[in-house]
Length: 169
Image (cartoon, rainbow, N blue to C red; front, side):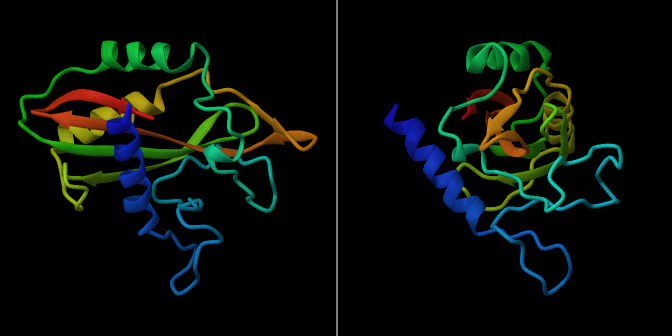
């Protein structure tokens, strides 16, 4: 358990060093905000909050918000994942937004080696993990302060020899 907590803390620190901006020179409202990018995002995916107030996954203190909880999510991913021929090692983090209708969009990928330094892993591996994540259904709708809210979610895959060894959080 302590190992998982240490990994999560290191990933949060690693990710907090990255900032996404809406326009060059303009800082994001919060570190890690994901703004609409027409080059990679589905125009049909809409946030429910006009101010783009997207809550962080930890703001609610409810843990993973998906039908069947974490065990069901792990089973689903492991049945869809096909081990690659690569010997890649590292972490692949897919961060995205769940809107107030339980729909997902604005997927972003962050890859590091096992020492949390920026790295690149095979396109075959990272593309497969991105597509699996995009295909996950059942994200819960969050109700907070009188209305349904948009929120960030992420999945981090620990990869050893091209295979998933652990899925975080």
